[in-house]
Image 1: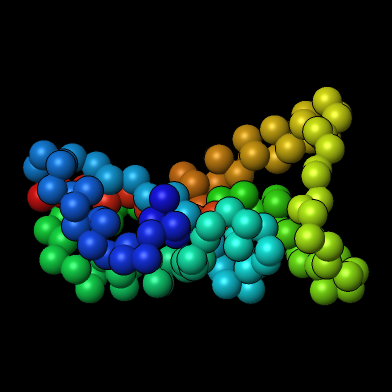
Image 2 (image 1 turned 60 degrees about the horizontal axis):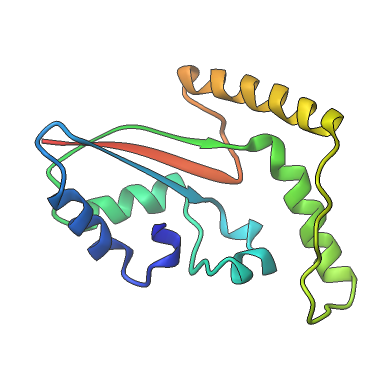
Length: 140
């Protein structure tokens, strides 16, 4: 939820107060400002992150612990984000949000297969890009 919170660093500090030593904090956020679109605004997002910006955020606060893993994910959704952004730029905006239709079982099956493949890439350092990012932090 930190993409929705004005002072994301203060929120992480408070979250870490609840963790015992060796406790794990998992952060999952939307990634890359170049993916910013109206869906972020409608969703109440204040920002998107990169691995670097999330690491810098943790470095800027008094965190006693270590980042164990960070990886982008949902790389398979990048073409959809890019098409959506192009559509937003080319078509006039309406005051009504566009309602998405439920994906067909075939589309769901394809997405599940792609996401299973992506999940396996984390063991090898993760995807170099993705529409989301996660980070695992272990408190000392």
